Each structure stands twice: as C-alpha cells, then as structure tokens.
Length: 169
Ligand SMILES: [Cu+2]
Image (tube, rainbow, N blue to C red; front, side, top):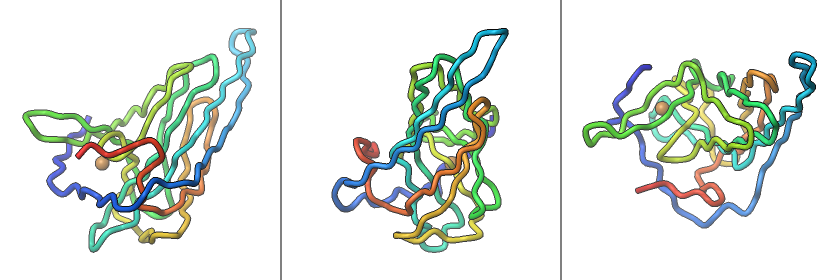
C-alpha cells in the first residue's frame, strides 16, 4: 500500500447549494457459479468529477456504489482518458496527518453494502491530467468491476456538494 502525504491536497471550496440533479446508473450481471445462478447488480449514484483547479495536475472523481446483488463484488480499477494515471484511494488519519492510500487491490463491496467515494474520504484520483475538466463539462470515467465488468459513467464536472454528502472540514 503506497502512502502519499496530502500536503498538496486541495480542499475544494464547497460553495453553493445542494445539487438537485440525481444521477444513477445500474448494471446487472448474471453468473453461474457451481451450478447456482446468482445475480450481481451494482447501482452507481451521486457521481461527479471535480474541475481541475489552477495548475494542479490532479483532480478527483466521486461515486456511490451499492451492491444490490447476492454476491460480493469488487471494484478493481478505474480509467479515464483524461488522466495519465487513475488510482483508487482511501484516506486515513495517522499521526494527526491525513494520508492518501492507493488501494491497489481495489475495494470489496459485500452483498447489500454500499461503497462511498466522497470528499474527505475515498476518492478516484486522476493524476497528470491530459484533459482539464471544466465546470459544466462531462467526462467519461470507466469503473472496472470483477463481476459486473466495465461500466462507463458520463460524469458531470461539478464542484457542487454531492447530494446527502458533506465534506468534513
Ligand atoms: Cu488521492
């Protein structure tokens, strides 16, 4: 697990009111495991990509993923044509410092559970941007799931707070 100090982490200004739009995408996948047919479904909501600020070469994307299926799922990786490197990062507090950790094995989402990527916590890190997302644009981000396969979300570029989620300040 790689640890990265977040000295350069930009605390995004969270001006404005709650986003009124809700964005949801659901994919279903049926599989036959040892003769038992299971249905694996993941629902993605509240996704957005933050506009690139100033000369910052990086930005983040957020999404809420609910596993509505009966078997565990794993988010393996994410890709975006807008960045040279895309990582799945978690945040932990150590020694009074917030640090980002690259989760190279991805995130397990157990049946019935929800994985949240939101400001101040888990985030999809877009590093060395080749396209600088601007407010109002849309950017495709592909999530790679172990069972459901690749899912491409057209993420709105927005610095508005995500519905129901506030950044710890
Ligand atoms: Cu990060």
